[in-house]
Length: 265
Image (tube, rainbow, N blue to C red; front, side, top):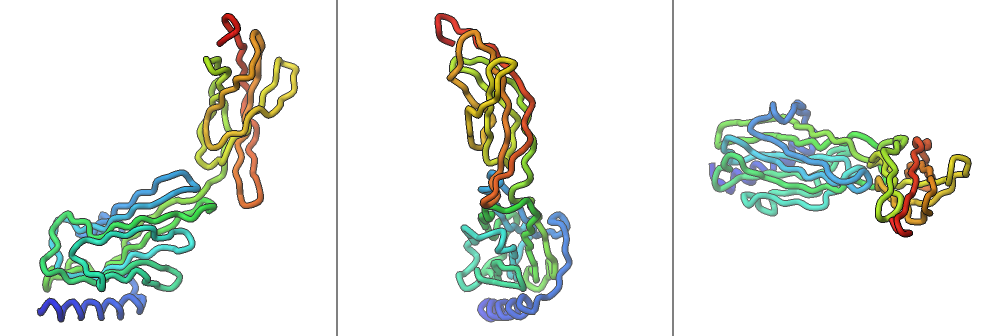
């Protein structure tokens, strides 16, 4: 078939099929050969991104129709990169299907796409301030062909990610020790916390007072300590939720006795 004619036919058919919302079978990536998706979530809960790659493996393809869909309330497309086999007119970056949005491709290559080739790379930013939830990136393969051979048809690959902030956990002090910087307070990590409040008391009968407010860290150095004095510490995690601040329960208590040599640590 003439390449220009086939390109026009593929583009027209894609518009009809995609906008008609044709149902597709949902499968795992491993069951959708030769198409494979590779996606990775990274970053702290309130600053996450997903890098998605669409690949064709161990085969050749001359033409195809594929859409990548996602929830715009959760993900925003920050960057896209398509393989050189595409033309600008092959890519629709404003594709919608119901409440889903995404990017669609209808392509005819002058030469078959070779094995182990990345067709598309997308980078998504995850919306900030989300409560922990699952979000899905759907890869709809309408059809993928090598000349007259149908390689894959009417299949949806789903990649699921847990994004956003989960509930904070009650922190646990791991140790309190003396260092050259003063008393070091060290606690368990919690990526869902926005910060930690550090409390200290002097001696067994003193009252706890706040001596620190740090971000999402897991240690604090207290330099305002006196020689031959015992200090007790505890921490509380907190998480910002709009105008509300949620606090954890208090951690366990640990202590350290400061012993300075010649007035220094």
